[in-house]
Amino acid sequence: MSEVAKRLYYSSPELEFDAVVTDIRLDSRHGDEQLWQVALDRTAFYPEGGGQPWDVGTLTATAKSGATLHVAVERVEEDDAGEVWHFVRKPLVQGTEVTGLVAAERRVDHEQQHSGQHLLSAVFLRELGAKTVSFHLGEESSTIDLALREGMTALSEADITQVQTAANRIVIEGRPLTSHWVDREMAEAMLVRGDLRKLPERTGPMRIVQMQGIEFNACGGTHVSNTGEIGAITIRRIEKVRQGWRVEFCCGMRAVRSARHDYLLLRELGLTLSVGAADLHSRVEKLLAEKKAMAKELKSLGSVQR
Ligand SMILES: [Zn+2]
Image 1 (cartoon, rainbow, N blue to C red):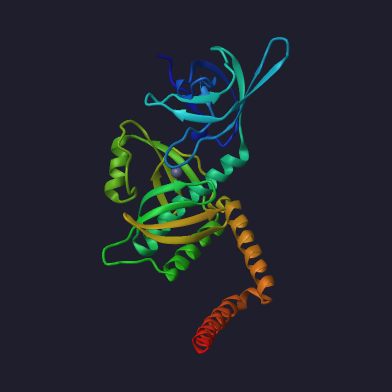
Image 2 (cartoon, rainbow, N blue to C red):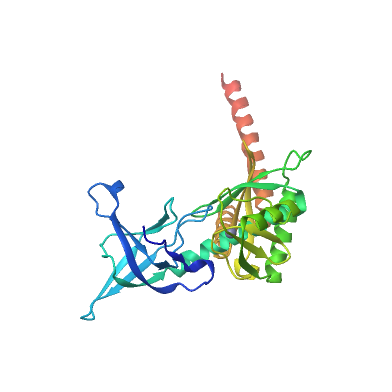
């Protein structure tokens, strides 16, 4: 078997790269639809993993005649042998030289949510002793599931405000994120010292991502280069779930979009009820009280008529 693709995203944020097709196979999971999986000698495409979704983008091949073929990369997966497969709808034969281009907007968005998760998890641990047990990066918002420290039975809105403020302070500080490789022995020593909170089970060298002054994390994902690039972090819904507490959050442009969405919603409600956002709650309470009183009056009128 040929060597697996060199992962360019481990060491470089560059999204454009040159590569050679090393293998191709037909994806059998899609029936009649012709979907191909292409392997390259090197790639900047991140495959799905660690809660972070795959990159999309294009592969462009140029024929000797100068004609170009653009092929969309719709999905990227890593197999058990560590090979990265790029899912495309046109076959690219082995030996074809291609230029790969990762779609920037989706990658940056994923980096903001994923790096924001590292930061939030570190701050939840530092401020409240709450450990992150899982992470999900969704289409609109992301969630982390927390196990609260012993003796702590619930997360309050005051806890959330405290964590959100502390996390955003670290965003403003613009702390660098860097990565380096260590062997398993060194990683285990970091675990014993408490520098790392957990280690993946696999053997071999490990990539350690450091957020300066905040945390070390054994992680193969893509990250922003400093905490400032995460942008604003807003924590939204919190709910009790079976395994602990689920915290929903948005980072970067998602936080900006959700704040705008919420403002417009409040403004619309205010216009409907002819009050400013600050008075919405008291206005709605007054309306509900009036409704209750009217219902009572109707009921008494009904009993008089009978
Ligand atoms: Zn990471």
